Amino acid sequence: MKAEHEREEMQTSDLDRRQSLAIDRRTFLKLLGLSAGSLVLPSVLASCSPAPAPAATAVPAATAVSAKAAGPAGDVVSEITATYSTAVTWSADGWRKFKTDLESIGFRVKLNPVSNDQWLDVMIKHTFGDLTTGVAYSRLERVDPNELLLSRGSSTEAPIGRRNFGEWVDPKYDQLYNAQAKEVDPAKRKELVWQATQVMADNYYYLAVGYPDLIHAYDTEDWEGVVPTVGNGIAGTEFPWTYINIKSKTGKKRLIVGRPADARTTNVIGPANAWRDEGKFIYDRLVQLDKDMKIIPWAVESWKNVDPLTWDVTLRAGMKWHDGVPVTVEDLKFTFDYWMKYKPGMMTIAFDPLKSVDIVGDRTVRFVTKQPYAAFVGSLLLVSFIMPKHQWDGLLEKQGKTDPRDLIIDNPIGSGFFKFGHHIQDQEMLLVANKDHWAAPAYDELLFKVIPTLDGIMGQLQTKEIDMANVNLTPSQAQELQKSKHLAIVNTPSFDNHYLIPQIQFNLKPKLPWADIELRKAVQHAIDRPFVVKVLWEGAGSLSGDPVFGPAHPYYNPNIPAIPFDLNKAKDILKSAGYTWDDKGLLHYPPASDTKYQERIKTMIAS
Image (cartoon, rainbow, N blue to C red):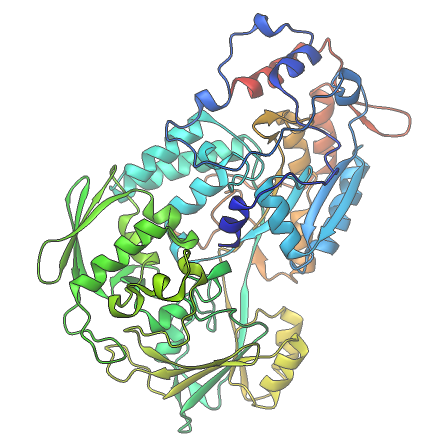
């Protein structure tokens, strides 16, 4: 939701890191020795997906530059800027290695480490420079492919302020994305998803650096029944199964979980997704994913696709809010009317296809969508939770606010398997088991304890001050903890996607040198991904050819071969593409007479 606020408050960045500037179409053609009238090419936006992009605050395009400054005509490739967040622990060491390798094939690289807040800012403004790395985390709703396919590659997400950060646009990808979004047959849909990820891979845009494993520790002397889940481990809060199923061996009534940071608010739709997971322990999701990532009923007991645009959803009988008030179909309708009206950030993508919500029975609500919606259950129902009308209705007016993300919810009332206990900012949050829930935990209290440092968390695991840690460990740290006989280590695969992308366009205008697919291809061969997985992650992770979905994801495409790290191959690709090197080893663009280079750039403009 931070990104949503940034879209509204966006201003022109004063970063001057973009040595390779975006240029307009007329200037680009001039650089190629062509007149603007010599090509009949559709504009980038005209050939995009027919769905209009949400409005983004305008950010001026980079200034058009002279042929010599932009220089495809044999000039040296300008220094490239690589921006990364210092919050991603492997990034500094990884980028030092990437820089060395890229410079060995003729690039000049400037590293630009920034705080995570700064990184989020330049990403949403698309001003990160030339290359960046980031992480798409294993959120529960990303088990459905729709959200990642949309945000990472759709043309509707390419304008500034949206999440196709490098502004890659491909009409074929858009067609496949739109087709899978409407295809309700699972097998046909998977085939369309695979075709879409193949198109992205063939364009050498989004490169999966790797998918790290999750390594968690817990006190096995006092507790049993942890449930490892892909992308969540045992202590993650995306999946609730450990927190529901864990039992004390010794009669303990309170489970204490250490974590390095705290929620900023107890408003479940508050800023920055601050309470997005633990909040779903208090507010029941409509459906859940079981430990095998299969959708199961939860607050709704059934759903039916009446026709391509209509779904009937039936509420579970006998539910009560934590204050004793019965949960009714009015609450379910209120929840969706509220989100459709106010569009809180974390809901926007899932809720955009909704047209109307109406009560059609004592416990049944009818949803009508604007188009066939393949992700209705796996995205919309899964991300949704039911809110009590009697607490939320009129609260904005009562508190004098206009944005529900700013509401103060000191005593959240849900229907979930935990009730709210108390919250002491940056210290602890206490949840109390709801013994009347159909999935009530066997223990009485869950305490999330804030311990700012990893050393502190490990120390309190060793001294049994905490029972479990919601923090990912390295193999070395896990090995150290295993010296304590009461601790057990659980290793689980994830589909956290650590990625690298180039800035292909800026403000939807082609950007050198990344508009050339052959240069992008060479760069991907020059990124030492095995170094990240084998050395920096100590082997606790996996590589993938699929640019979006890792091997643990249900929509992983095993048919896309991984790109090997091969500097000689990278140089051969550049040489074959017309690039040259001077006596200092610096890379130069192909000459203006290189017709193959011209055709590649013309293809980029046409797309």
